[in-house]
Every structure is written in C-alpha cells, then in structure tokens.
Image (cartoon, rainbow, N blue to C red):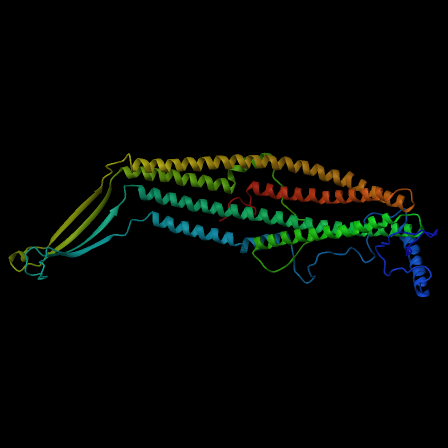
Length: 478
C-alpha cells in the first residue's frame, strides 16, 4: 500500500493517493531508495518554509508577487495603444455606413435638381401626304414638317416638388447626424465592455494569486497533520476552475474587440488604454426633455413630414389640366403653282383633361395624405419612445451612482476584511476551509459586481449622451 507523501507524524495511511502537486509516485515501504527519502525530506523543509511565509495572520487581500501585477492581456507590447477618442475619430472617418449615407445625400440632391426642371422638349420631323411611289414632287399635298413640343405641368406643381425634394435632402442630413451619434454611442458602449473585460481579467488574476496562497496554507497544514487532504483538493479545484472563467472572459473579450474593430472599419490590432473611459457628463433632466425636439432623429421625421405636406399640395395641382404646346413649320413639295405659296406655320395646344378625378386625382391625393398620417404617427411614436428612454435612463443613472457608492464604501471593503479574517483563522486552525471558500467566493462576486455596476453606469452615460442629440459641441453639423 503506498504511503501519502505528506502523511501525518502518526503515519496515517490512505486508500487513494491524490496530491495535486506531486512530482513523483511513492513506493511501498522498504522498497524505496535513499534518494527518494532525501527528496521527501527536502520537500518537507520547503513546506515548512512556505508555511512560515504565507500563514501570517496579518496578510492583506490582493497582495501581488514581488514582480508586480502580471498583465494578462495577450496583446504584444508593440501594438499601438488607442484611447476612446481616437477610436471614435477612426470610426467617423472610415465607417462604411456613414459613407453610404453621404452617398444617399448626394443622390437626394440630384433628385431635387431633377424635380424642379421642365421635361425635355420633343422634336417633331417628318414628311406628310407623300405618294406611295416616294415621288415627293408629284403631289401638291406633300409637305415637310419640322416642329417642337413642350409639356408643362400645372402651375406651381414643379416648385412644390422642388421644395419637397430639397426638404428630403435636409432629412437625409439629419439622418447622417443621427447615424454619427449612434456610432459614437456604440463605440463607447463596446469600449466600456472591453474595459470591463480587462478589469475582470485582472480581478480574476488577483483571485488566482489569493487561491494560490490558500493552497499553500492548506498544503502546509496538511503536511503538519493539522489539515485534511480535502482542503488541499478544494483549493486546487478552485485554482483550476478559475482558469475556465479566465478562458470565458478571453472569448468575450475577443468578441467585443472584433465588434469594435468592425465599427472602426479597421483590421489592424491594437490595445485599449488602461485609463477609465471619459464620457461627457449628462445634461440635466429638464434640459434633456426641453431639447428633445432638436434631436437629429426627430428633426429627420419632422423634415419628412414637411416634404410630405408639399407632395400633398403638388398632388392637388393635378386637378388642373396639364398643357402641351407644339409649334410646327411646314414646307410643300408639289410641282405646280401651289408650291409658290408661303410656307406654313402651326401652333397646337394639348390639354390633359381630368375626366375621372374620383378614381385618379382624388385617389392620388388620398394616398399622399395617408402617407402623411404614417409620418406623423411615426414621429409621435419616436418622440414618446425617446421621452421614456430619457426618463428611464436618468433614473437608472441616479440609482447606479448610489450602487457604486455602496460597493466602494461598504461591500468591497467588508468582503476583503472577511477574506483576511478567514485566511488568518484558517492558518491557525480556528476556521474550516468552508469558511475560507465562502469568503473567497463572496469577494469574487463583489469585485465582479463592482466593475459590472461601473460598466453599466458608463454605458448608461453613453446612452444619455446619445439622447441629448449633441454631437461634437453642436446639434446639427453638415
């Protein structure tokens, strides 16, 4: 039966041997070599030294190795470090969605120019009343005609359409501003998520160091015969389980980084700055509500409503008949005296008569009016939605401030003191491993909660900045 390497002085035996940090297997009693006995004695001396170093009642939570805190970020040190402002500028300069919106503005501008212009004139040319043998001089009726035709819309309709198209261009500019604001908000939220991932990784690293100390204490007590193997295995399990949490954090970190690079439209890797993201302070609640009507998204809806009202007026102009004007010059090709008559001119007016207004013009007007009702309902819904979001976000902002103060002033210090007391009690044998485990889990939850609350607070500030509608110091910038 193999003996435990770290057996008690009484020489207790065990049916199963499972030492987390064993480096060799024991041999049955009487068959071991002198080298194995010397090596076991050497390990026992190291355990005593480790116990005298770590099992100190006054140890502090979060103590780091003498080499300093290890940066668990896998990014090489040669990668450039970006701040959140640099990331925002990169996104605003290279995001393809913004480039597409600028192209739409140019498209709407081209449509606005077209809508205010007359249709192209039509040239009329041909031979009339010629014989079937194509002898153009044989008939006195044969004549050559050359004319021009121009169509005219009802009076004032072109001006209404031009003004409507110009208002659509204005709405497209507001849409571009709103897209910029949304992009800035998304960059800030993703940056905060990435910053939270790095903070949680560093917090997890400190917890790993702390569990390493707990493992050493339990191992030293086990070697002295005052602790159990279950305590050693429990500490080892906690160390190993933290590695799985670290892998999960790295997966989430990579996901947030890829989303951020997508918004920035860059494929070059980078590191984020270690400084806390600096977000603009929110406006007062009354100012947010007062300036809500100036938000780019609502201004866009208002511009679309104005354009639709102009289209209704243009549709009503269709009740007036449209006019086409045609002027012709005719030259006779006959062989007799009639060909000596003066050349002839003709002027034609063509009216587009609205003979069935109930099925055509009135229905077109009703269609445009219904579209206006849709625009108005969409604007009212968006206004109400923004109002609710401002009220909700402002309330959450105040509550998160209180939670941050609660964590910083009470929960986190108490959890750390609880861990220190549990470790000190366990090192002296006054407490069991279960108390240490509960204290460690609690402080880990509190530390993660601290950064989760802070990240929610920063993301809430980013949402408030978007709801204010202010972008780079102004509400509307072309």
